[in-house]
Image (cartoon, rainbow, N blue to C red; front, side, top):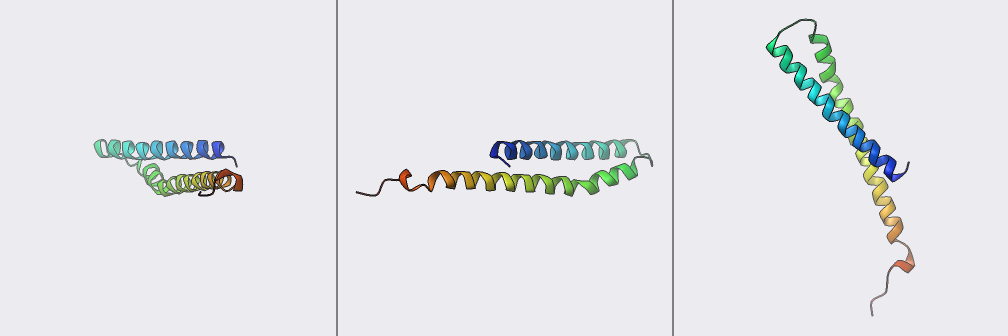
Length: 86
């Protein structure tokens, strides 16, 4: 995977996490204001799936950082890139 693709993947996973959390909080507020038994299973499933979304974002971000470090070290490791001290 290339670094720009990893950046895009991490960005999309972050957005998904934000939208997931916002939806869960909105549905919780709606259920609190207007109690209905039909919303309970969907709300429980939504909150139960939140750690999966957070894990997906964390893994995508870790992969993005790993690719950035690897690319940075590859560019600075070349022996002609540095000048010895005088």
